[in-house]
Length: 110
Image 1 (tube, rainbow, N blue to C red):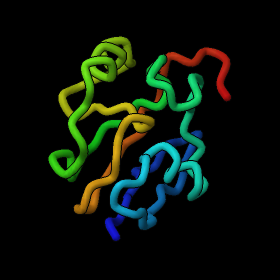
Image 2: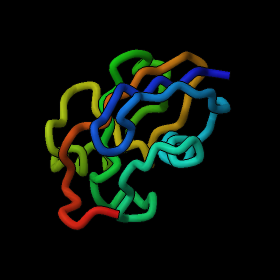
Image 3: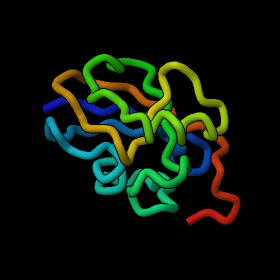
Image 4: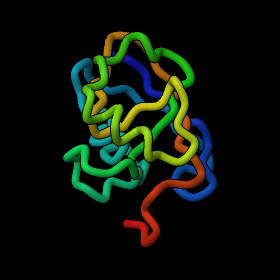
C-alpha cells in the first residue's frame, strides 16, 4: 500500500502524519480516516476548494483531474501546478507527500 505523508499544518496536523492508504482510495476520506481533519465544505462533491492540497511528491501517480476540479482549483488559495482537490484525488500506486495550505476558502471552518 502507498504511504501518505502529510507535512505539518499548524491547525489540522501540527506534528505531520504518515499512514498507508489503499490504491484507489479517495484521498480526502483517507485523510479523515487517519485523523487529519481536512476541510470539506461541499461533502466531497467538487463544489468548493476547501480540501485543496499541494502534492509535493508523487503527483504523477495520481488520477487525472477533471475539468470541474481544475475550474475549482482556480479559486483555491495558493493554488499551483501541483495542487489537487483531495475529494477528487484517487491514491495511486506510489507514495505521496502532501501539504495542506494554511488558508482556504472556508471562512467558517468545519
